[in-house]
Length: 75
Image (cartoon, rainbow, N blue to C red; front, side):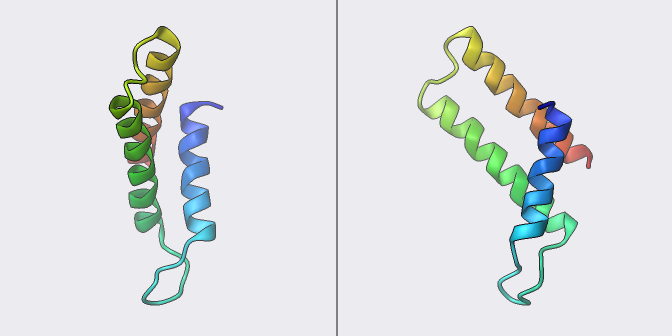
């Protein structure tokens, strides 16, 4: 899956499945974007925390998630 496709998938998942706890309505696009960015930041933080950026495969995964984050920010 491309970074752009993954970004769109994350936003769709957030919009379709999560509700604003105060209004019990599905979250809007701005809230979905914020949630998706939090998810990606958590993935990147875990990779760094556990030292999962040492080899080429994992560096590529880290780069992939950084690019997913950039795509989310563009949406």
